[in-house]
Image (cartoon, rainbow, N blue to C red; front, side, top):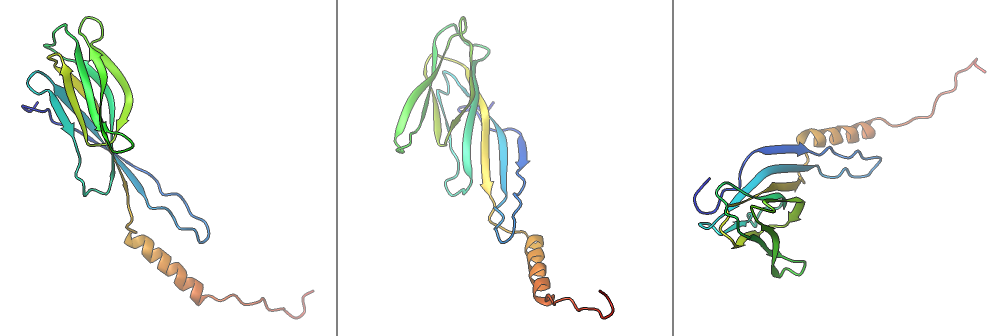
Length: 176
């Protein structure tokens, strides 16, 4: 791990959402892609806080889904209180303790995808850790770009509609 605040990196698991089909003159919604990155950081006596933030000019929606907090090797049998500092629905900064870990009775806590909007700061409020925090950084992107193939297909369908006019069927003589 890097010195100071631990790095929040790892592997990419890209899921592409399929495009919903349209009917008639309805517009097809823009495709949605969801990228999911492993997240991890460590709080200890040397690095008591870690802030997870994203670039503000990014148009994607970011979610940090926490899965687990656990004491790691070298932890003492003491209370380790982990606090999360984030913004509430009124955009006011609030601090909430989310875990009280102790090696002898509760060395880990499952958070079951507890979702937070960045920026988020984790603080080791008491104890010396080390406490490992794990989860997923999810990035949801809506694409407004229409691919060239799709625009060409739409153009050719419009041309066909203009070129082919519908004419009434001709009656054939001699048939009843």
